[in-house]
Length: 60
Image (cartoon, rainbow, N blue to C red; front, side, top):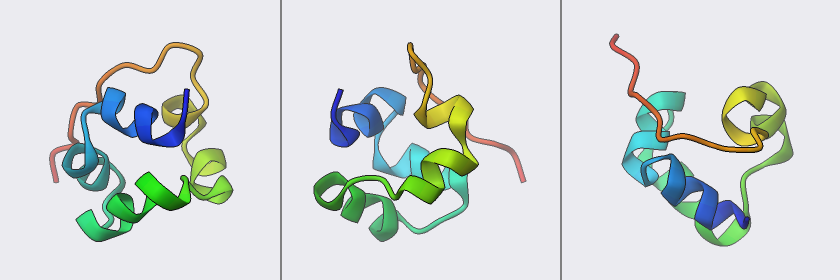
């Protein structure tokens, strides 16, 4: 699965950005550039899962 497909499976750019607490633009750039390895290692339960599930946005 590509990083773009993974982001879409997790719920899309807005959901991933809100979950991680980063800007929409940051995650949108990952669609073409790929998810940075540090982000994948910081959130292995999200990005390194064998069967990723849509994210639930955290309440702040």
